[in-house]
Amino acid sequence: MTTGARAPLLAKDSGQGDPADGDRYAGRHVPAWLRETSTCFLTNPQLVLYGNIRDRYLVPDQASWRLPDVREALWWLMEPLGYRFLLVADPVDGLQVLPSGDEAVLESATALAGVSLGNGRPLSLDSLLGVVRAVAGSKDTKVGIMVDYASRLVRDVRQLSPEEHYFFAACEKLSHTSQPVRLPDRQATPRYNPVLWVANNDRDLPAWFTADSMAVRRIAVPLPDLGDRKMAAELLSQGLASQLPGGSAPDDIAYRFAEQTESLTIRSMMEIVRLARTSEGAVDSIEAAARCYRVGISDNPWSKPFLRERLNTAAERIGRRVRGQDEAIGQSVDIIIRSVMGLSGAQAASNASRPRGVLFFAGPTGVGKTELAKSLTELIFGDERAYIRFDMTEFSEEHSAARLIGAPPGYIGHDAGGELTNSVRERPFSLILFDEIEKAHPRILDKFLQILDDGRLTDSTGSTVYFSEAVLVFTSNLGMSVIDERGMPVQNVTPDDTREDLVSRISAAVKEHIAEELNRPELLNRLGDNIVVFNFIDPVAAQEIFDQLIQRIFTLVEKERKVKLTLAPEARQTLLAAATADIAFGGRGIGSVLEMALINPLARALFAQGYHLAPEQCITDVARRSAGWQVTLR
Image (cartoon, rainbow, N blue to C red; front, side):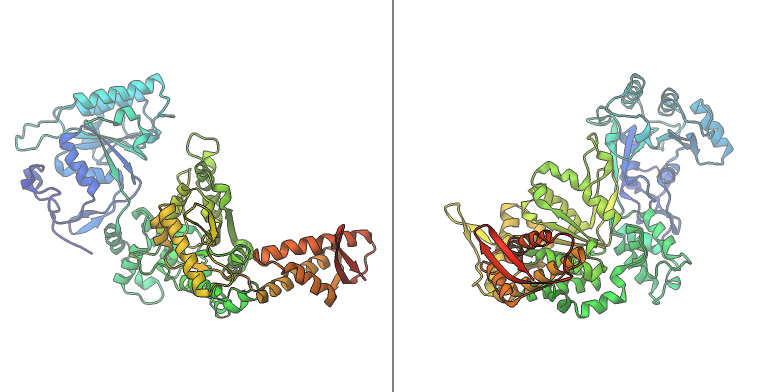
């Protein structure tokens, strides 16, 4: 942990510091927004602080560090600059003062404000305006006022009542008439008595009040960067190494902690440490604590022993269900193994928050892309129903993005969240299938950039959903045809092409479509080498699929009608010839033929028998007649 002697925030020769301050914390880390705030005391009578305002902030404290909240951090900044006290007003608890517990300060603050402090009673806008005027107009005392929870001062900033409008108009005028305070000590630099508005968003205050105003400065408070998180991790994780199994060194835990908390606040890091220190044994590593905090579940299916056992025979297990796609199955299993080992995106600077795995299935229609996604879901989570499917043909319009993350504020249902964010919040450990992704509107693809890069998405309610424990699967028919020089679609690949030609042509077509037609090369970069190309269905695979579908049909009949069916060799050969006559549409085409040639006439034949069905029956004949397909049962 970094240490150092007490020194000033601003260098003496900058012309911005008071000589009495000394070189406050020279060479030590101070958040940039606090440094900017200090400078603005010289130039701006009012400031709007917005963004990450409910966090804790790492500030020097003699030879160590402190983690104050926004109120304490502002007073930490103001006290050495000669300010007597900081009034804090909020719509819930009324008026308070920092530093607290000092009777002389409380007496001075009460006299200046003209209202009682610390009674827990909210101020009316008229009373608050009086306090703001008293602070900004004080000529003999350097003080400030912080209006906390400014986002909740009025009900609707777009439809202000006359009283609310007058309040902000008076504050705007005050920002133009305030003057820096010049104390008798001529060496002290004149500074404003600042009015500090602390809001969730700068739009939570009237736009005409904050926009195009040189007197009202807006300062964004950002999330902590990696450097801030590393310093905070060193401070927060002291002694944690002895409480976690594995004997990790303290420095190693601090580094891993900072890596695992990308996009989180320091306050969240404090909660994660508290979770890791629990005596209940819910987590056994800092990574597990971070995951539990993000998704709310301490149990991690990715670390279960049964998953590793399944992966040893995964290709064989899936191959019995998805026929003729050995290469695609092998590549997909490799990516899942990489995910189980926690190495997805390992080449990136930080991969802690990215999705566990990303696959892009491309190839002919009806060859098993969706079926492989279901098989992977069952393999990983033990339940085929753990996958979440979105048909992207339903998202061809730009406005349909609202279905994923929720309607914008002001629209009906904006507080309900989105289909995607709600689903992942309910089931963070899941496989998410985006079917026929090329049919989605290009603007919707921008949502996936954030998911693939940061592993998170914020819905219309402002809640953040994490995708760090999910597997994302995209399917597409891109590359099957291309546009020739006449603008006409022509076939790009055929069943006669070799595996190498098939992979090369389809991969090239996918990359060209994403990078050039959609103009989303950054999306392509995030997919990397995870494009999995499927083969055409060959005659051998077509026959295997045929047998699977027949067995599935007979199993359903036995379950629903309590009739055990068999298929005579001659009837099977007739059905097989009809179903595999044209395998260009893959397994889906075979299923369509069986529905017409077997399921429909079988249903009629069983229906004709009434309620007295023989428990065992054989389909002895299947024939296509003038009235359609018919089956004979014996």
